[in-house]
Image (cartoon, rainbow, N blue to C red; front, side, top):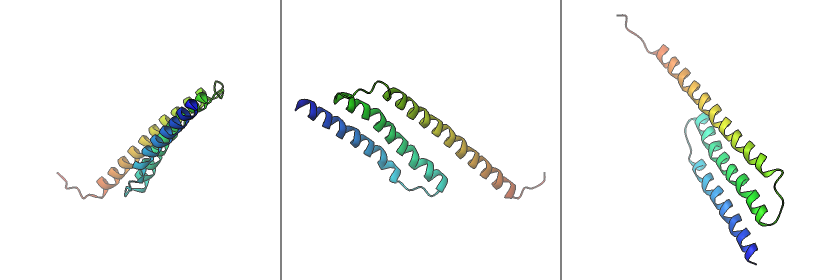
Length: 111
């Protein structure tokens, strides 16, 4: 009974923490591009929590996880890092190009 309660407690803690990480994604941002990256940033963090906590719960239950847990965790974290880098580059280039368009529209006085 003690092992089952520990497994259920770990499962509830993992799901609860992932749920708390999803809450900021409910904040609505006016820019559709920024809103997209904002939501999926928090979804990806919740996914990392689930991918990291899931094998630990299975290990507590006595399931062998040696062959797949570590590569799954590593690939999930690397995908998150690549996502953040790609999102930063995309948002930076969109802001930079928007600034260039604004600069070209503003009338300039000759000196």
